Image 1 (spheres, rainbow, N blue to C red):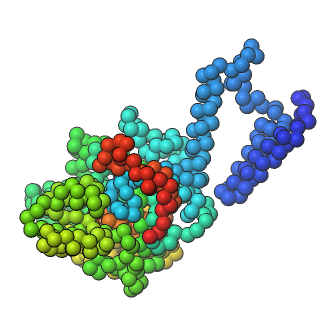
Image 2 (image 1 turned 90 degrees about the vertical axis):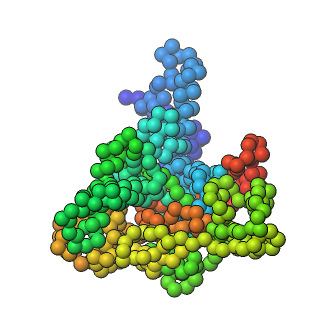
Image 3 (image 1 turned 30 degrees about the horizontal axis):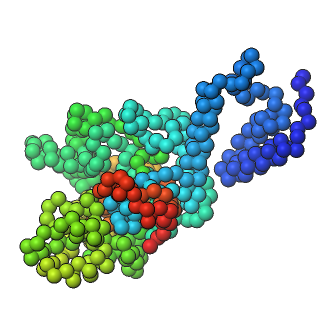
Length: 471
């Protein structure tokens, strides 16, 4: 039997630090079965019964070749990045103007996982630095098996109102590969409504007792059309929670809150929320005939992504609005109004982007009375997010085959909105964000590139290492 050599003091110190770090990590994770890994750490540093680095040692005793060292360094780097991405932080690039001017298109952020607690991976076998698809090969960057149940480790704080949050896009569990915007559920609803408008005979002899049953019928028509036309929509894919695209918004309401928007002013539990300095709304500008030119856009920092392709509809902060009112060739400025339907897209809730609610945000452990009117508000929570079947027959609601009048929520939910209020696809359009979709909090801008300018003028030096605050 191989004898254990007496380790040096430095080896003992290294082993002690590694073992302590490992034990603290196991306690943090809360799965004490991982303590069975301690003998492996002991063997790596002390006993060395198993030649863990056998592949790096040539049989002839010579120094390992360069490619072996490169592979060793690459594997170590990938493992380190994978662990860092899970437990500490990850990079995120702002792709849209939904948080302009708080966050700019082209900002690269460090997103802290420890702020709200790291979420253990639901799909643990995945390539680091890639969210869901390899960009060149258009193949999955992860395997769907094995999968782990949702578990979040303890974080430094709880998610609070007004926090800026990175989260997985909730309605991206199903994705037509070629059409990702609007999301799948909005797509099948719109396709179904369009097909019915073109073929009224599809409704012949159809009698719907509830709006829920009518919606299911419309969705089924749209769903079939999407699946039957892969040349237009692409293959329809399923994505696990942690492989859905990352979004960043401001959390305006937390679980248990009642949210309402009145003439663009957000109210939480009846109290007006703070209007942040960088919050924007779209305004229709009428001039005396002079064109709004490039110099105007540059002066007020209005990105191309925020410039309307029709007319002079421009997003402005309150400060910008006051300055523009002083310009002599500006004759009038009026806030833009819109009355298109929003979530839950129901005849019982005639809300719009600027006047919304009141809407109660579901909370774990809370029970709500289910009605034929509010079932569309909670449909995705009951089915997609909390894994139940839902149906309505003869005006009775069934969950998992049993008639019910109430439902108790398993998770907390949040309502997210962009600071660029009239140019943000957010909870007003696709509903609640479940707690298991929360990724982390952006804390620092480490790089910022202006997509409207050419390199090196595109570098926004002033934004480097800018801290991300609530305001």
